[in-house]
Image (cartoon, rainbow, N blue to C red; front, top):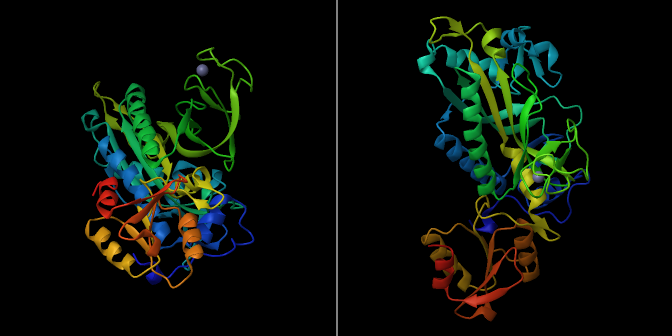
Length: 406
Ligand SMILES: [Zn+2]
């Protein structure tokens, strides 16, 4: 992509109301544009990041047998009355049509997916099943803040699983947990899992996948010697206490952001919709359900919060909108751009008629993993520099391609 063709431009200053790093850097870089508090437009560069995160999550959900669907976000009031959510969920967006009919905008989709899946499940033999979607969700937040970390409209992967028994849910949870940790790792995030705070038959959160960042809204206590981690909201231990699990280390406190979550829904939705299946004993049973979320747009925000320096964003390779920023300082750059593109490298080519300083500053702000420079000083070679390193070196184009695995 030639920078001169992009309709977006980097901004000199972040918007005045930007209160977090992700809001500042993503807006300055032209990745997103705030439509109103809590609602953003994803611009060409930002959409590529969002799609990369989405792709990683989709691959991991497909790998554990999740089946992708796309459900409506505009829901009839009746299904939310049936589950009790219409009156009890304060963040549920409610809409009245011109014919006075009422609707909800989905903040989750249990009310849609339960009847959808259960119409095909008559017997225990049809279980377990897991379906997921990657779709926009809505929450009527009183104050939307923290950039794309906490939106009124946000992109989320929500998977719903249906099980014959609690044991089968527990078995599946362990599989999803591994897939989640793998997905976060692939994105370049280190997530810690908090243990159960709610049990079956509750709508309380069961597990949270937390990423340490000062921009987070939760405080967690964790052990650096083992995987013990708990949200301070429900903790029965305090900072400095011995780790209750391994006893080898003291608990540390940190700010964290919830990158994913798991709800053990028990039989709540099967019962609410009176949708059961015939069990091995010939009797009617209600499915044990789980809801597994990963905030796609939120994770893009978390990535910026955890991967930046004072010059801008430092994208991990797996989610970067382009692998390479090519800073062109003479006419030779065009040729290098074509060679790279033909070899299958994703390049953002800064071909604008602006000074070198501005191009370097923008390359740092935008944060592609590799910066290449072609100019009079580089001769027949190309200057290679990784965004997260201060070392630059002159190498041949063939060496560039080999380093990029092309
Ligand atoms: Zn420990």
